[in-house]
Image (tube, rainbow, N blue to C red; front, side, top):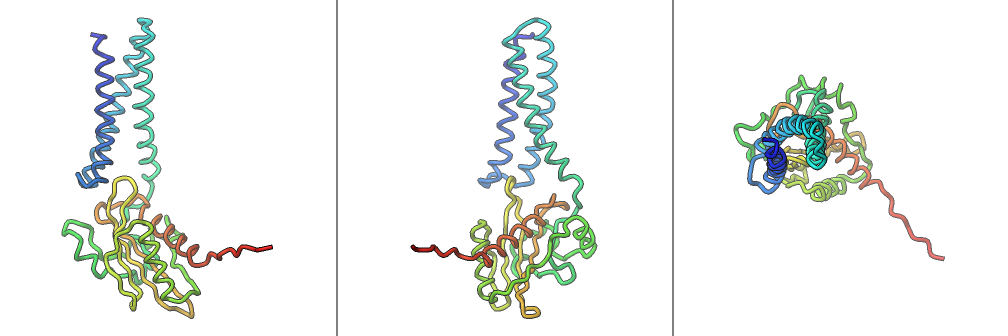
Length: 251
């Protein structure tokens, strides 16, 4: 019976690896929906944990039998499967304490309004009506999500927003230059969940104010993705508009 343990562990490790690869690659190439890919990945983590237990018991068995080669193989399977599951469990636990919100904005009183995005969303997707109860949660967990104030011309800021969205690989949904509105769709790095973004650029007190809103299409919790997207984008936008070109000195 023990002679079948090594082939079983090898085959199981290959299966778990294939499921993990398919759960992410399948989403990225459009074969499966992100929610399906996430479900596959979760199953692969559970399978890896079970495989770790089997590999650990098998290692004890071969240690008692003083079978060095099979002991080393079982130990290798144990380390690989345990490392894989630990990485994803640690990632989940890190995000577990974040609030259950899926719509984040720099202006919680008058959030930027989506104009054309509602027409590309499915009826099963999240509602685009901003929930005012999320404002307090956002302030508590993401206090750095704030509007950006610039002293640059509005047209320049608008052009920089478009350029930065394009550089990030976001799909532009609509442009309203006169109103200072841009809508786009971004995707999360791993599973490719689609989040819709709207940027509003207005003149306020002799400055240009840039507000941004990012809303997930599915799920009641974004695990901080929308807040991180906003803070990163506005930081990059500020750097893009305030960086000074270095003038080479000639001697």
